[in-house]
Length: 298
Image (cartoon, rainbow, N blue to C red; front, side):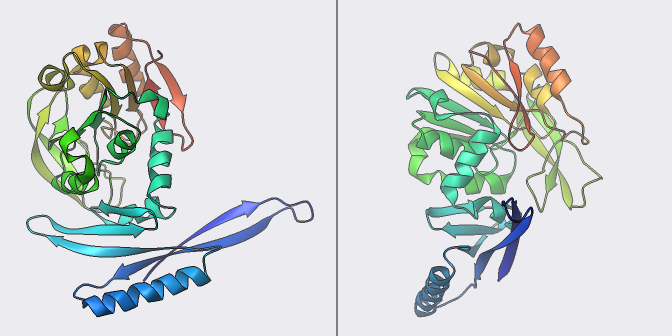
């Protein structure tokens, strides 16, 4: 069993500070359980959830072995299931899938009003497809899911299975040119990037990956289409924007994460200079988790 705890402080008239502990119980589902044992197990979890329902959240975590990819996990929440490539992402779904998707959209300062029925979402650095999931649920016409990590793309396919006919998957990284580049894959988090970061205490595997540009994606998929961009390139944003002149000229709205992820430095200034040179409108927004977003002001 995994136990994740979080503390919140509340101010009261009679007591200046009080601490309330809430425990989130994430239950691991052992492999090779018989059907009867699984039924018994879930009944037990259900009873425990009922007894602790006021101050606790209980979800199950199921291990799945995929040939050539290794282990993936399915997180079973009260409002559905979602697939993740490593257990570090469990905490995102403690409050359920709906909450996680809405929280992510808020991080990018994006609203359901940004999604029209003919909107295509270009999800750059898609990870497991959460932003595309949110957009498609809000009526997007389709999504282009872009990520260089095989496991992320596999999870995204599972998570977006109900929208299969509307989604195009590109298993590569965005950059300023078509070709091959060295990429640092993180084994334990979502911090994979073009840049090795020695300050982070995590295992990274270096592999060569294919790269493409947003301009190339525009030519091949988006001519005469309405589309928006969500970009999280983990510090590679200036290079991606360099390869996106035509794409950005025709883009209805864009959300670009320029947080301190390139050797722990922000890419905001470089991206702003490029957008200014393209004569594009933008504004800088600091969202609820201090992530800085640049997006088109329409």
